[in-house]
Image (cartoon, rainbow, N blue to C red; front, side):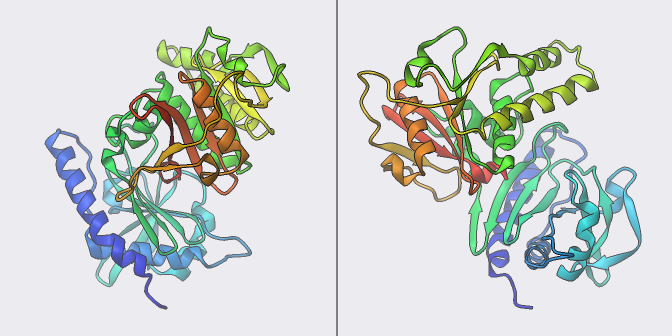
Length: 377
């Protein structure tokens, strides 16, 4: 089998990231840290996972997660009586057993090379993880110190394209809190902070795969309605407040497992509304105001003609483009909405997996589109 060239390109850069990241974590006094993978191990893991992703087992493409750790660094692992070689064919066969989110195949060096020793849901902080998202699409991640936080993406390998996530992306002028939270390698927001709730809504929107738009507007203001055809196709009265209620319980420290389950259910419900043609409006108290809303240009406002676009990957430079160059009708209408409503955000998911956060940039005095799909995979 031919070598996957992108694995060779990505391996030394990813190895340098983990080495630096683990040194910094140790200097901060963080405990339970993973062992750093070397470039050779990273290349071998990526190569095997890539070729496995192109195979099919009983008609299905494998979706697996590989973690670089020994079995004695996790609690109660499922350990194979005999470890198996890290090979594409073996990974494809094992995939059905570990396709549920949060289950990782453990990989560690043995006498005869890298071996898959078993599976575990628990991994050390900053552990190297490689996830097969779909055929030919792999994501390198690591576990944040906070167990409840989303894994942080390090690199995305899409066919022959390697994109390293830019750790400094959040330092861009006017970077919205949502993007900062996605880039927050070591200090993700709590459940009570808006950016983290929006992150989870963004992940759920992207997951349903039908595309959608979410308008995030200030509570107590009706100004956003000037940019939506009245009356909205599906007004919500009274506002749907389940998400706000569960967040309040978590903030107050009185939440129980039922509240956490309810919060996830509320997020999935709102994400589902975004799949309806039109936009879903939610205020910053997390109350759903309408869905299926048709965005229009505010009376007397200028049409949006140019948008700054950035992507938080190494080597990306800001571009000023026409909104039509970003995407279709959803993107154009979302950019127009933010141009008319400077205190709002618009989150747009495309059916092809692209995800853009539109925010007004006071520095640039124009709409800024943040392409963040590399952070959501």
